[in-house]
Image 1 (cartoon, rainbow, N blue to C red):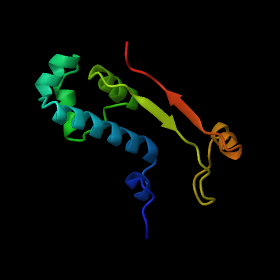
Image 2 (spheres, rainbow, N blue to C red; image 1 turned 90 degrees about the horizontal axis):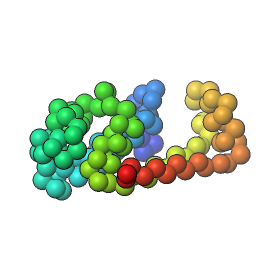
Image 3 (cartoon, rainbow, N blue to C red; image 1 turned 135 degrees about the horizontal axis):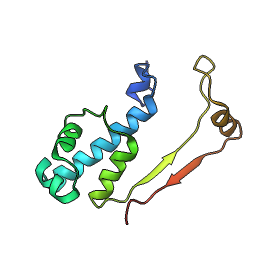
Length: 119
């Protein structure tokens, strides 16, 4: 059997899309730190974000992080961030889709949200 492309969904996690988005964002933060050879202490000095938070990200302990907080951390690392959200109909055996989301899906709309973290 083939995976869906989202391991959290494949394991039946209730907020699979959000969990995957946080994991991808964490991977990007780790990639930037590795590319710049930043320790958690160096990243703290550069961004003002606690080194313990960078340590949690490195250890994939993401439960305390909201997606917007992680995007803000990317911004503090001088990264531009673009977020794209796509709505697709679920299979009939899936949970009920909220009314606003199902309306967008029924009309085939795609909503893209772009946010720059640069100030």
